[in-house]
Length: 206
Image 1 (cartoon, one colour):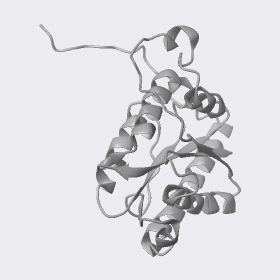
Image 2 (cartoon, helix red, strand yellow):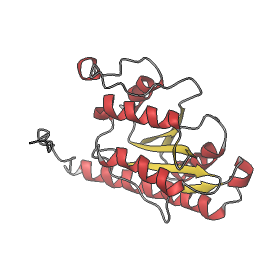
Image 3 (tube, one colour):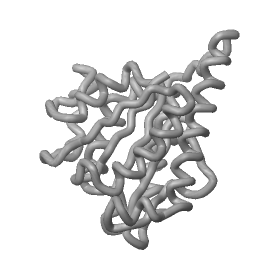
């Protein structure tokens, strides 16, 4: 079993990374393999809605999105982490998730996921809600914790003093490991992910 920890912060080893590492400790303790994936500091363009990904099965823009989508094929679960910018996920993370979930959805469906957010003071719950919406539109089980998945602090050193936040991260890691093991156990006795119906699209223009 393997979980990819996606770091959407422009700071590779900052507060978001610190939170993800706490989740990682719990996953590793439960014998779950982990891999960090930092989206980096290069520009991540937003989705232009060209629709070309439906033809070539990947995003037309060659950047970290396609690199992640390729890795996602072999992953069993995901933790997406982002700093809070203006009560939302970072701009780069938003662009990344928009394109990753639109062009690479086939590699994500049915796999457990969770969002982790890092903030100085406020806006965490709004960013957390925003990120969870990507999972609910992609048939991905959302892994919960004992509180909303957030840590507080302006520096990694301050985050390490957020005892409740760190405990929330560890609980999240334990819960992710438990769910992955449940899914694995179910598959061994023939319980598979539900077959999806053909997508029905409607609008409300008459």
